[in-house]
Length: 74
Image (tube, rainbow, N blue to C red; front, side, top):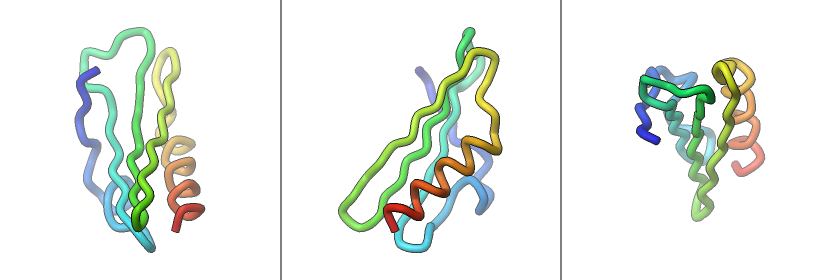
């Protein structure tokens, strides 16, 4: 899988309350399933959130998942 960083707006990339969050999406061409990855770092803990879905991963639910996971780690 080749990944590309999504739009670096604060909603998708930046510094969380106690760490950093990076969001990546599969680079085109995407096959049947699209994969998105959210990388979270908080202190000495690193986490990765993977979501894949046939036809594409919905942006808002994925973003909410990454934000909530970063808050749990923060």
